[in-house]
Image (cartoon, rainbow, N blue to C red; front, side, top):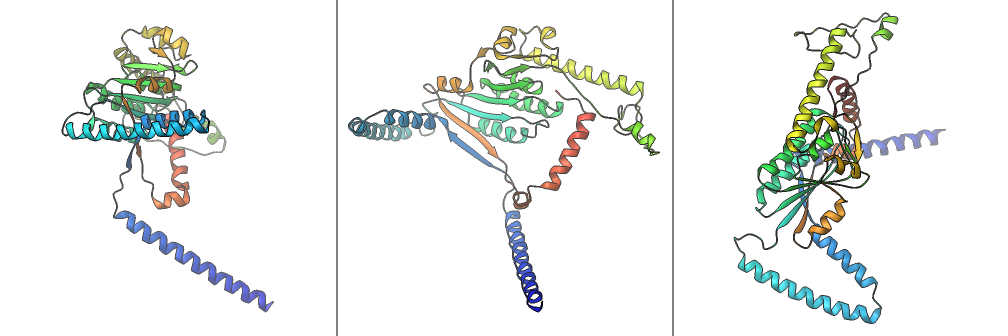
Length: 349
């Protein structure tokens, strides 16, 4: 018994020391991070080089030993000539535009609250800082839509490219619906995979109401507002016909603005025919005029590779150390509750 007691005391001391050391390490790293910039990191990936490397790997795999040896000699000579040519071009083009125009490839995989727009903003700002008149942009878009203000801002960020006369092509492989289509229609050209979901030009909002349940439990909920329509529908209070009517009016007004925006971006559309909230697949969407061409983003980029240098731009947010350790459990729970609340209070597209 005494041995177990001593062992338990020893184990407790070890755990205390380990926890103290871990806490000290966390404090030191956090202090070090405070001295660093909290901005994220901009990452540039040369897709042209990746595609060429893939082609070389496949080509070499199809050769026998003798052919492979000859192929290596040819490739070595070719790379040497390319390096010499690149060096000469670099000397000639100091201070001048690059010989080969670029395609700036961006990615947007949107969630319901469209928080990815913060990274999109940084990526577009970076592109605009260096893009030349002959350059163009491609956005690989995937989104089923979400809150109006989030996707409205995302569409405004894409508009910055058009305002600077940089041709923008939107490539949709899976879905660009509702707010996602609002972003897509900003592009000068929309390319969609055959079975990608397109359209859903409509607005929706829903909110549960627990007022009757609370009344049965003799629980009163008081809601005080200043302004007749500060709150139309509530989660816990008693909703009125007047509040419901105003809520519907707000939805219709948002839908009207949505339709006007799409029609302004794509004036050839019969907006009343397609703004019913329905969605279509790629092949149907091209017939409706919602998109311009059926195809995948891969085929689109491969078709541009001979004439352009393909550069993928990504902005990676820096995560705090505590977020990496804990996964921000408490913060995630708060955000989840807030999202559920916002879904009832704000229309979604």
